[in-house]
Length: 285
Length: 124
Image 1 (tube, each protein chain N blue to C red):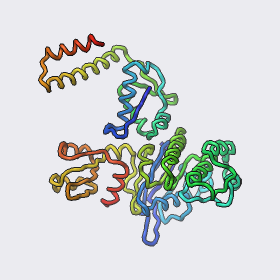
Image 2 (image 1 turned 45 degrees about the horizontal axis):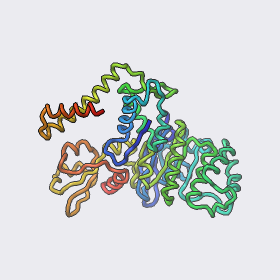
Image 3 (image 1 turned 45 degrees about the vertical axis):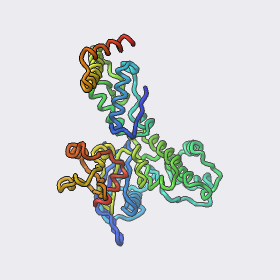
Image 4 (image 1 turned 90 degrees about the horizontal axis):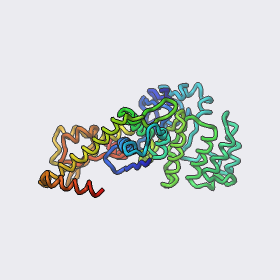
């Protein structure tokens, strides 16, 4: 399979924070969720992919092309949606369209009109008067109107209500009905990804902790709860992180099957959520 | 065809899909050569990941329930009639074995169990 996005040993140094040689690969036809706590490097990585920041080392390839050398070509084929609005607040949606449309080679006015109608966006309203959900949908409309092959979204769901978030998830699954397209989105609301994401890349403190299929992640890990008498040296070692309280413990293990064979009948062993996994890994590092 | 996904279940989602499609084939709701939804369409409709539906279809294909024609889609495999009968028999056997072990648990005799079975059989 041809990767649609490839990041290799990417490095960026700031005062007090660094991206430390991060690598991951995404195949076309899928949705990849990019998760991690605040300040872990998600937005920095996305800005580097879009060449909005200068990298200090490593390689980024989008559609197999170097992201700096082929910036214009790549940007014609990607759509991006940021948490913050990056349009002129005083313009109406229709006026803003006139500004952005000429920037794209593949701009499609009919697609734009269709998405505006689908998303119930008012063309003559000013951008500053839109709700947060509508601004996100407008960014998506622009991204979809130039037939982007890769959608890159930085925290698109933060601050949105559950109804709009679920609409967005439907739109994203709609996009990858075309197996040549891909969606890369960062978020700290992991429940959104729990359903639709195919792959999860987890970053913490500028380092990739894992990048793997979501099903594998959720099937292999286990959330174990039980009495503290069960915790001996060996068992403690199998935990990514362990929380103890007066009445018992709760912890995440990498190998649920193994935990089942060791502790069957003595402890409660459950399937973790993505949030559990993110939380325990963040604390256990 | 009906597919209901439970998020609360301990059974992985791909297994839930496998067992429900299998059930639809075995009970005759899905017939030989009937087309199945595409992997991507099923993922979209159920709002789950493409990888999950792909894994379910791979599993169904491995077990001989469906065939996938590259570029065209997936279809219910033309079942060998005897094999299908065999599979349905196996389901009956499994359920009976379950009933037997439940009966043994409360120390029911074979005669009592057979009596029960005859009653149920005639009722239907």
